[in-house]
Length: 312
Image (cartoon, rainbow, N blue to C red):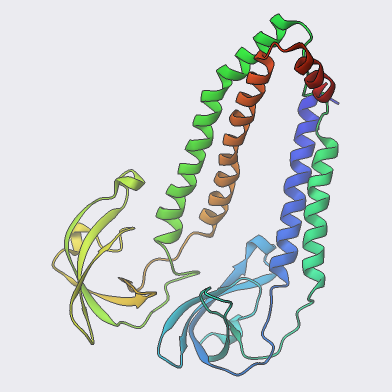
């Protein structure tokens, strides 16, 4: 079997194992334990979760607690179902230290804890073990000839800028996709009608060059239903130049104002973000290559012998 096929099989083993681990973890997500209801889920919308091959429902909702605060809620493992659409579902709340509160329907439901967690870790370990076993072992070497060592060091140094550029570009790509297609399109699986808590009027707008100018960033004057007016900058094209001078409904989330009824997010964009982040880790390769080049250029005989015994 060629090195190419071995590497391809190793990558396939790793990807398949990690997908199965994610499948197990998402399929049996934590459910409610029948605790007291402290909030209500409304405006529920559902669609098939194709990451789980359509075996589960992915539902979004607006959760309002007893203090009137609203939260966006999304669950991908049929905690809510199409049967809940058009109803008000009592929700219980979970908090952990300073993390944002999480909710779940206040009804007891089955969750195979801790077996799905054990299954996830087992599949992750098997994925990395299989990839390590399949990856060809002869990729390292330590030439005894100083001229060959220098040539290898030059090759590694020549690759360093290109690999670094690829890693940085992939990381920026993840940032770009996240900002344009995930953060901007906050609502999940359709437009969710949030409670209007004020009116926003765009005063001025400009291109947001952090995202290559494809989205707008506007200064918006917000007039809350209760309280004094505030001015806030809103990005991700929540407002555009076409909205300047036109009142639009806004709502308050986590201390920031944002436009109501934003378009639904692209689930595919989330996958792209993860893939780009993984590609961005290529930046670790040029760093290790640079270290290897320095070691190859070292002419210390004793150290050469130690490196040759360790790496060959």
